[in-house]
Length: 251
Image (cartoon, rainbow, N blue to C red; front, side, top):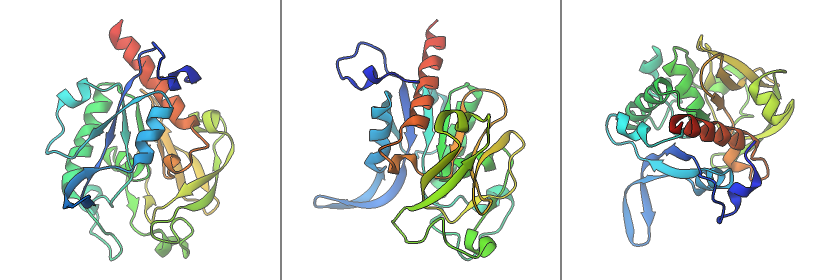
């Protein structure tokens, strides 16, 4: 795991550069109310505390190889629903906030990262994007399937969900067997992509984490680790993978 000396600003150890996908949203700051590229500060802090150098990646057209060339790791963050035609479906009545520009950028970004062997950590929407990019599908509204809203009870408020991990998986090895995680999602994986394996489930059977069967570090969680400042294990493991990738490229 990443050692604590990463958190010492005077450490001489090179920190891996971690790209984080961002939102394009109307936002108010000071006297301004304008379309903005933004991300909750909790993501930035999580990467910094784990030993990475956070770099924000706004959705700007088609992702280009030059972006990936400057990164040691990629975090695909949470956010709006993915456009259902990308997984062969029509939008349901509860699918909302679709951002085609963000979809276009992040699907391309993930493809480039995967081709370059760059470690990737996918959070909430990020996990859903990875699953769709690799050929899987999504449940568009969990309450329609489960009959409850336990994964997102109140807008803007995280729900604590109990999750059991699969023994022997990367997520279980890093984070443990039983977790209480911070969730805020009304969608989830339906058909799992062939290149992924489900490694954590809620008590209702919802897939809460998946990871790559083979290849470079690729872990996705349906929950929000950035909302839990007391648990840095998954982000530390990801940053360590990014640091190893950086060293391999330098050798």
